Length: 90
Image (cartoon, rainbow, N blue to C red; front, top):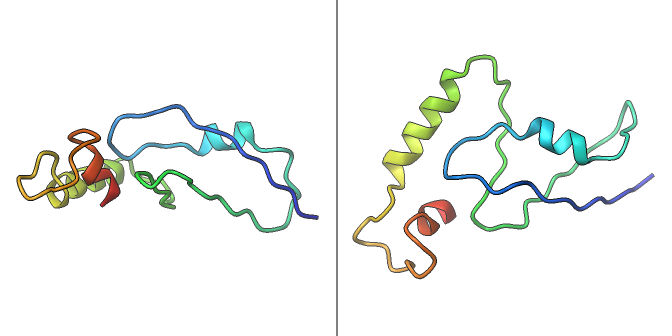
């Protein structure tokens, strides 16, 4: 059986966010076995799977991304959509 459901999540600020509960609340009843595909239609967002055993992981990932792709970097050409847009794409 194939079923497709489209839903939206509330906007969030830049960062690593737990969205499992938000997603589960919007899905139909799922079978006990099967495959679930999630597609993020926004180019400035991504899904990452993590066991979430230690909350320090989210903190550390946030720190890593803040250093790798800082906001307002002087070499960004794509700046029309705001300071956080190009880092979000990266």
